[in-house]
Structure formats: C-alpha cells, structure tokens
Length: 303
Ligand code: CP
Image 1 (cartoon, rainbow, N blue to C red):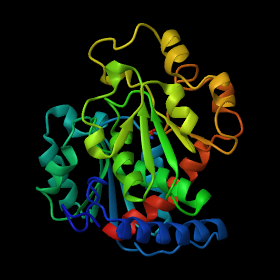
Image 2 (cartoon, rainbow, N blue to C red):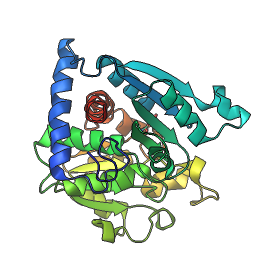
Image 3 (cartoon, protein in one colour):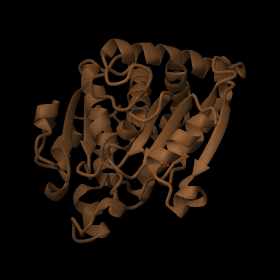
C-alpha cells in the first residue's frame, strides 16, 4: 500500500494511482455494505488500537466506526488519561499496545514524523491519522474519493486549496493524492501561510484567492490552525475572513457546479461564511460520511 512500509499507511507521497484506485474500489464496496446494513466482516478477530495524542472528532470516531463495522476489536486510547501523563514515552507506549495484541495502530500525534518513528519500533501495521504539520493521508484519500465519486475521474479537474497551507497536513497529503489522480491543484492564501516550494510538489501557486476560485471545480478551504501558529500570522480573524475566507459573495462567483470542501473542524465566519458552511454546494458532511468507508478500506489493506 505504501512504498515505505507495505502494510502501513504513513503518507500519500509515493502512493501509486493503481493503489489509490484499488482502495477506492474497496471503499465503494464498503459504502454499499454500510448502506445495506451488511458490512464485510473482514477484520474479525483482529485488534485495532486508536492512539490519539491530539484531539479529534471526525478521524477518531470514523476509525472506530470503520474498525467495528469490519468486525475488529477496538482499543481506544486517550493520551491525557494514560500513563503518558506519568512520563511514558511514545515508543514504550506503542510497544505495550502491540504486546496487548494490537494488529493495527492508528496514531494521531502533534509531532511531525511520529507515525514513521512508531512504524520502526513495532511489527504491526501503523496508520497515520495525522502527525503534526506533516501528513493526514486518510483525510486526503477520503477527500479525493468524495470528488472521484462525484465526477467519475479527477482528470482535467482543477482543485483549489486555499488558506493556511503552511501548517496544513491535509493540504500536503491532498496535493500528492490529487495530482497522482490527474487533477490540477492551485493554491492560494496569505503570503505568510503559503510555504515556498509547492511548485516542486506539482501545485500552481496563484496570487489571490479570487484567481484560484475562478478556476476551481472544487475548492478546499483549510482550517486556520491557530494552535500551530507560534505568533500571529495575520492581523485578525475578521480581516482574514475578508481577505481569504469563502464569503457569500465569493461563493456566488464560483463555477455553477463547483463544490466546497473543508476537512473540519470549521472556524465559522473565518474560512467559511456561516451561509456557505450550511449552504448548497458544500460536501463537508459527505466527506465525513465517506471517511468511514475509506477508512474501512485502509484498515482492511493494513490488516
Ligand atoms: N479532519 C480532521 O482531522 O478532523 P478531526 O481533527 O476532528 O479528526
């Protein structure tokens, strides 16, 4: 599944189009099984451990739902109520979780590279559920799946990624995944939040959000990650919304069939005007729903 570790998912970087499309095929099957109330129990007897060292709603619940639907036993771990609070290291923690019988460790961690580190210290599979500002591969796969199901192909489509790209693991993972599937990716955001070197990864950086939106078949609005900013990178949330948010006016100027995406959680009134967050044309809850089937496919491939 991943060139770095055959039965782990650490990043979308280096995933082949064939691998992604195979995964989408399985996700489609799982989505049908979930709708019919007859999910495939292909992980019966396996143990999935959800290790979250950082807060999460969508990813944690989605992996739990996915693992249970596949018939796996699920161990849920919250760092704040674990022996991490007594000083136990990440490596000692995961080695103990593996000794408890985990076949797959799903890891979210604030440090970039944490999932790679863990994968070098355990024999079981590791799924990166978001590591610092580095990668969030399952989010990118569910985002791309959502567009693929809608369009049938990403070839010839333009996806605009807008906002705090600098701190966004979602942006990086999506960039790899979307370009692998043949989409053109354009990026725009505050100059302080758009890192250099994105062109080398296949993106086209545009000078303004309006230039990016004009061309977009889908617009992916990124969450402003205030918790990862050591200093203020823009004057105020209000000014950010005006200059870089998807206001109602900007949403009305999108192509008629353009879709609005957001990985969540949404800062209402900052990246998205409330009317846009709740309006037609956004597929935010479809992304969340698709996350279960896509994560079932990921766990199955790793299990
Ligand atoms: N998109 C996402 O990762 O959301 P959570 O932080 O709620 O898991």
